[in-house]
Picture 1 (tube, one colour):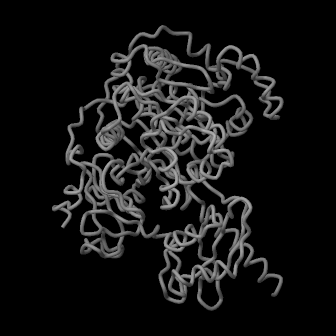
Picture 2 (cartoon, one colour):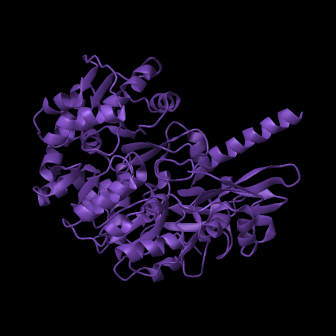
Picture 3 (cartoon, one colour):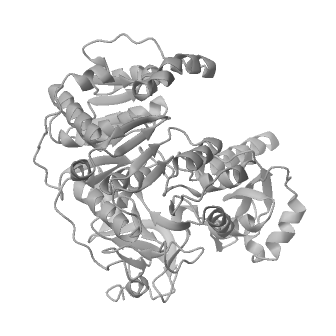
Amino acid sequence: MSDTKPWIANYPQEVPASLEYPRVPVTAFLKQSAERFPHQNALYFLGKQITYAQLLSMSYQFAHSLMRRGVKKGDRVAVMLPNCPQAVIAYYGTLFAGGTVVMTNPLYTERELIHQLVDSGAEVIVALDQLYGRVEKVMPHVSLTHIILTSISDFLPFFKKMLYPLAQRKQKSNVPAITYSQDVEPFLPVLNENAATPIEVEIDPAQDLALLQYTGGTTGVAKGVMLTHRNLVVNTFQCQACLYKMEQGKEKILTALPLFHVFGMTAAMNYGISIGAEIILVPKFDPGQILQLIDKQRPSMFPGAPTMFIGLLNHPEIQKYNLSSIKACVSGSAPLPLEVQTRFEELTQGKIAEGYGLTESSPVTHSNPFWGRRISGSIGLPWPDTDCRIVDPGTGDELPQGSIGELAVKGDQVMLGYWNRPEETAAVLRDGWLLTGDVGYMDEDGYFYIVDRKKDMIIAGGFNIYPREVEEVLFEHPSVQEAAVVGVPDPYRGETVKAFIVPKAGCELNEQEMDQFCRQRLASYKVPRAYEARKELPKTMVGKVLRRQLQEEEKKRHEDQSAKLG
């Protein structure tokens, strides 16, 4: 059945079923845009503008600096930065030097940082100066030989740079005392010690790693996903094909998604640079700041997570801002409620399309057509050159159309495997097919639907309950801003359903009303047995709700109660 690929018939006529992919490294995108659009802005950061010619020059300079510090082809360089020009320079500089980038979340605890640095074997880290205390503490446990520290102020316009120390004091975000040495160096002098002469390190795009991207660890120990230059190049070209109305050299992409997450890295940075767009870098998502930026900078694209769109829609002053510049929004990392899509499109007149992907697939494999038939609740159609099927989780056999099973994907954006983890790799990669761990089905037109994660499924009294289905119903209630559903211990049913709800401003959670609302829309066994109001839900940096954290809190509460009773 997978040979027929019914989804292709539903592609917009502008999207080809198959594409040509040049055998080039990821750095080819920056070189090409610097040749075509040298004087156009590549980056905009808090008022600072950097052209494509300047970005290429600084990336070459940084590559030379890394090589002078012993970085050779294949060596890992950790980049622990928020969205700022230094993150882009360090990323492309590492790739020009032939190194492998290890994107590192600045919010990592010491334990998480040690795990990633030990596992990857990174010897150089580029980090924010404010994080030096944490990096210094892990030094005895890891193999780092060089630390390169940068300040947010390094790439601020003159007046903002002068005011930056005052702003830091006001926010009480003091930089720890740093003694610079041969092994601990400041970013700007390291960058400027070299001329911007081009570097050519021979790269085999299909085999050489561009990236070791660690999975979020929401389902266990974080694993290093090995993504080659070809993986990232292919996904970027697929992105171009599906966003066919976006024009070369004319777009602006507002980037609040963190670049250290593969979604932001591909959908904002690599894709943006490949089309010569201006990338508006936002270090931290703040709804008020985002609305101001859209109003003033007029971006045409805003990739984000549903929580970001929800945050904007619930801002009390949203009507003050002109959002009409937005042409396209890619929504990923969590299900997009229909109400959110409808309201956001009414405000912007742009299109917001739900997509799907995994770190293991660079990340995108599916999306609803931006300017074609979109189905709410569906992750859309597989992207060009991406094959998909639904398989029996037990046997791996392909299931007939309409059956619920595990989604498996195949394509050149799929990873080589997990770093130094052959057993885990063998468990998810079979004959080129990536088993996603997500449960779903395909309809007769080739649109795919995710029912839930295999590991998130709740089994209550022998019934399988998918949290996403219950959450979709909760989102329909007018007083619900956000919702997350988990299975909690139950002495009778084994597990039962509990809903965590963030009410909209001015609303309160009424359990009796919610129960009635759900009973009209769900089979009785799926209706939550408990509700809890929260001010916010625990999330990853890209807005994915950490269900496991909620489950652990509930498990501990259950154990504490049992201990008191015992």
